[in-house]
View (tube, rainbow, N blue to C red):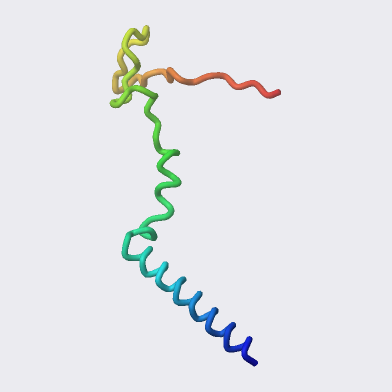
Length: 81
């Protein structure tokens, strides 16, 4: 019978620990937005090293005009093995 009281006490301490962890995570902003950070990498379409999306310096491509888009500099062909 004493083991039953011991197990109830341990389970209440664990539940209190989980409740404290949950309250801490809500107050510190851990649960604010779980969906958007996973999509942020899919929306990044600028080439590496260019902050404004322009081609790297020394490129042989002409500047883009509104009616003619700039060619994709980083596009590479992928072959299946």
